[in-house]
Picture (tube, rainbow, N blue to C red):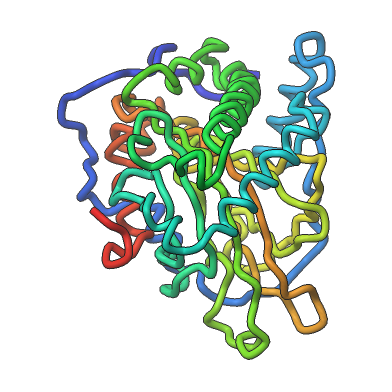
Length: 352
């Protein structure tokens, strides 16, 4: 069933001024700023696991399942996704090796202001809580990596591993987004054209994350989070987690009043996916991005490191995000990401 009627089936590329700019206040930021409370926890919502096996033959069935999960809580997991477990394990091993490097080496490759490429630590401050996330991260965005790769004598094979893994993540993300394009009345390659890895405007990002071991003295501090409540800026997120490394909680945007958060059980085999704000805009809110956060460990739980890898499918900077029904004013993906980044990162700790 087609839910919206698009004005066209090709993503609009533009360099002209748009109705919403990087200085225009955003509804997403206003929503996020109200989500700093502790809330409660519930296991009543179902985080669905959807098999992508025999994707080409089962595309219509898989599309129905993805659509049902996405229009319910905006979060789901995919299994039988085609990325070999050995490749996932290798990517995580390389991530751990990177974060184990001395701080002075990692800081040779700093996150540049507004660029989503390079290394940062404790510089991301969510509008929901106003305190830094207790983590470090390394961003890989293909056209922006000049001078940001560790040398081979520092970490051999790092670049090749990330480039290969990002490529596989993009292919999977485009398969999933193709299913959503079908349901939205777009042609199947609508989102693929909006994420062109050969373009200088490509801004999809693979992010390695290391959440620091948690100090015992902070366990009861209500203002400290591994990651404060937020929605993702992008079209679609793929999140790889490690079995046993808990903490991720989700909350559908339509149910924020109750602030009852659902834990997502991490699994090596499953990829946790969520709808991002760009897709919410493109779909006139039919596909809603939802809030999620990473809570601190509780007394008696493992206080050690938590590692994740996230792929953020973010439309190319020159693509115009337009909601067919007029729910949101048009804005380029470049302006959109720029405003969201500026609201999340402490400029004093991110080099320009």
